[in-house]
Every structure is written in C-alpha cells, then in structure tokens.
Image (cartoon, rainbow, N blue to C red; front, side, top):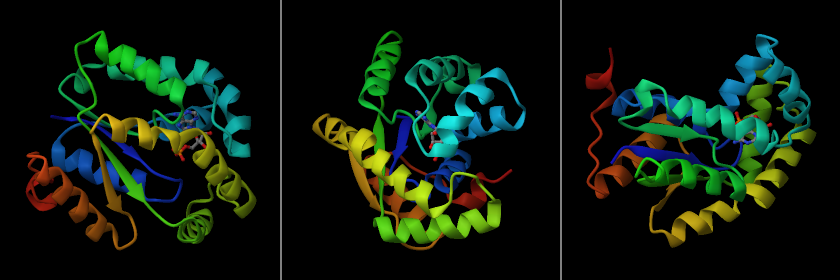
Length: 201
Ligand code: AMP
C-alpha cells in the first residue's frame, strides 16, 4: 500500500505535506507543479510551452502533462510506491493514470483530500506570493486557479470516493497538525507512518 495521491485546492498545503510524507514513507513525492516550475526556470522547451498557462493560472494541456508523469513513474525510485502531488487534476488525467497503472497491474491505494476553505487558501497564497515570489500567486490568478480547481479537479473527489479510496483531511492548522491528521488517516487504513524524527536522514 504505497501509491498515494494528495488532492486539494491551491494553497491547501499539498506541496509541504507531500515533502514531509515522502520522507516519512520513504517514497518519492512527484509534483507536476514543481516539475513544470523547474522547466520554466531552466528555460527548456517544455517550460517555454507551459509558462503562459501557469502564469494565467490555467492547467497546462494534458498532452504536455501526461507524458511527463509517465516518464517519471517508470523511473526506478517510483516502482515501490509514490506520492503524487497535483496530478491527476482533470478527469482525462485520471483516465490516463488509470490506464498506465492498470498496464502494470497497479492502482492508487489512497487519495488524501486536503480540505480547506477558499478564503483561508487565498490568504495563505498571498503570503506565499510575498515570501516566494511565485508569479501565479497574485490574488486575481489565485481566484482563477480556485475556479479551475472547482471546475476541473473537484469532480475527481467523487470519482475516487466512489472507488472507496478517498480520505478527507482537514487542512486548516499548523503543518505538524495536518501531517499528524494524515498519519492518523493512513494508520486507520493499516499504513504505518514512522515519526518524522526517526525517518530523517
Ligand atoms: P501546483 O504547484 O500544483 O499548484 O501547479 C502549478 C501550475 O502548474 C498549475 O497552476 C498548472 O498551470 C500547472 N500544473 C501542475 N500540475 C498540473 C497538471 N496535473 N495538469 C495541468 N497543469 C498542471
């Protein structure tokens, strides 16, 4: 049981929790947002194609995204498990991921939904805009990203819920509180999570 997905609106803390959980569970965190950002930074062809979509707060087209995730999931470190952060985020991406995993006799074991109120999320992201200078964290773009989430990604919650693999976790609280809630949710499904300290290093 080690194929996980973190899902939730922008600003719910997926990236932060993904990094912590990946250390605790000793599986790679795969963030499509991070992969796109590093391509933009390194001025690759993919980065050049993705940048306008990201700056506008729109999803990058599936044609660019699916291939990238497939390539990442066949790397050696993903074979025993992985934690996806920010993919899939459209119904088509779910279909694509399903097909890929099915071709390897695999499936997602658990989808962790980070639940956060939109206004709280907007406040968090404007703080991050100041701290990290992300070009897609301005208030107008954040509001648009929330709309895109509601339209394109929220339907995934029902899909995974009907498959019985969804667990909802309240994302309002300190980083440690939210991590502890996720660990509890995993433990309730028989997945033990070592304490962060013992997993470090
Ligand atoms: P994130 O870091 O997950 O908030 O992603 C930042 C931006 O990268 C998003 O607003 C999209 O433009 C793009 N992006 C990340 N993941 C995906 C995905 N699975 N599908 C399409 N676009 C994505």
